[in-house]
Length: 175
Image (cartoon, rainbow, N blue to C red; front, side, top):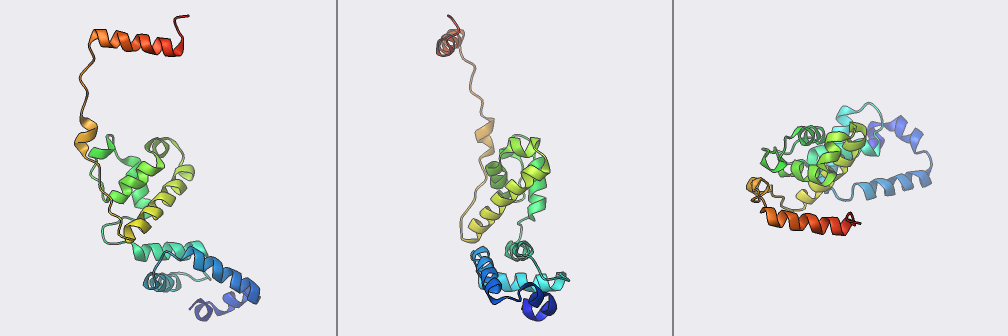
């Protein structure tokens, strides 16, 4: 398809047969987790939206966009939702469980405190992996909001003193 649509660019980029075979192997490995229909839809989208011969990254993005079932937000929307979700995270009304699990895998602290240039690529890796797993039939559930909210009763004064003494002994602060 790309050879026909991007004729001059294609032959300029892949004039050598050995290079073309290497690129084909690279693309085959990178696109292996998509089925044939998703790859064809992604290729059509690339052709419709690109003026130039696409990169592998652009092709992956288009295949992922075709893969997303209804209700699954775009990676960027999911990232923003994960970054802006209030605590406790389990009590937030998530647009999709994948967003919660991608945020959890990335780390809530990292999402809240690191620059987007650091946190977004990590989030995107987890999000893409979870979307692939979702496509293979994995079920993702949201945590029980009541689980985080349960508080333990305060310790008695005697138990508190005993634990403090144990901690001091462990840290060797009495010496």
